[in-house]
Length: 328
Image (tube, rainbow, N blue to C red; front, side, top):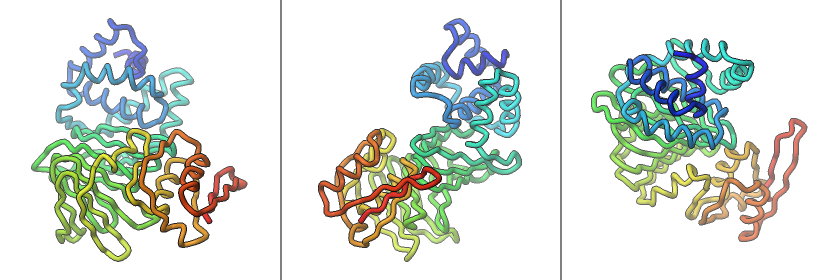
């Protein structure tokens, strides 16, 4: 396979005839299928692909749906080395792209790889078992290069939407601190905020169990239920919710119902890559319900919130050009 054509295929820049030739090549062997999926993930996660390129990619995915939904058993590690070779053989632009996403994907070929969604961006990946994960801005996901034959373990810091491919013999386990979220074939959203020491688990479909790391059952979720865990005092609150509130971030929105300003501030920190501090405890406890769009500048969002409540704020640009926002 012409290496440069494979990259152009990922970007949607080939003729219809050449696209069909690539599709035939992908269908030809399991190795080829694995190579395509891994390379597409690398391209997506690097942040190089633009929104208009994803539209072309959606068309291509429809043509190889039968490929991407199969159980792919090959290890990623072999292809990651191959992908690096491809990149280095391309033009200077492609080489620069490799350097760019090398910083995005830290990996150990023998153990695990870590995916980091940059501030202000989302990252969508497909794992080798067919599970898909959408990472919200500023989120880190760590998972093995090769799955354990008895379970599928990942570690999460931040927020992610999981669509877990069903496998009764290998449960899918998300580990956060001293708790584990266990699923087999399920769709759910997790929002872990280390700054607040809270975890929100919201189930969209299927069922899942939340247990302590020592195996003690904590709760079982059903669709449109949310478990709010406070890691400071080990409390758990179970409630019925509209799950769309907890997944609206995929549409570029922050939707909240009776949420504290301090909680909303953490979401804003992730997306805008700023630091928000409170000079008064009373301001932390201000509660809001509504929807705000992430495509607005953060000062406009703060102004909207300020107009409905009694607080003020100050934005400082520090010497490293980062922003510090103080809510008073």
